[in-house]
Length: 227
Image (cartoon, rainbow, N blue to C red; front, top):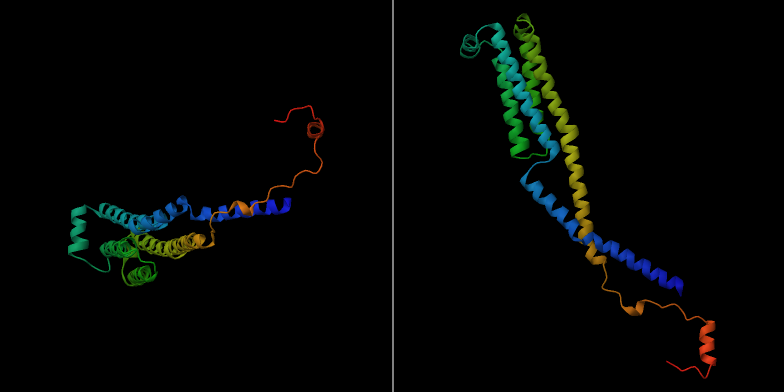
């Protein structure tokens, strides 16, 4: 009898544990995940967008420094922008950084794309353009910036590709799978949760066969009043 009573208590505790899956905190986390996914982007994607912004700002800063080193900014802007020469100008590297920034922010921040094709296009265009420019142009004869700007632009483009392909997309896929698993368990929990247990399902312990000494004295003492 004791074993039956303990097993019933254990089964009740198990059912309560299963019912706790369907509790308010779990559904609150699910609803917050859904609303957060619709309104904002994940932390790892936000980090990627910040790095894309850093790419643009860093290339812009290097280009401005190159303009100051080579002469006045106004004169150098006229030579590199108005009198653009593919073999000597660094303006096209700056435009390439602007192109990467606009394409990646539009694809992965505004449209929230979950595929690698957008960054594959930007990285391929960047790599091909820089390789051809270094081979054909005369940048290497213009001092340190002739080496620095193409190399840094090339490296940053490939770091962005690595971040998206090995960090952003896999982590977001894992988070989504985890969310779907929790939601499925929460939806199936009410089907497995039975109704309230009746009193008939519980067993009281058997009465003791041997009465205590006080009970025996009360029963065999006729003079003692019965309450």
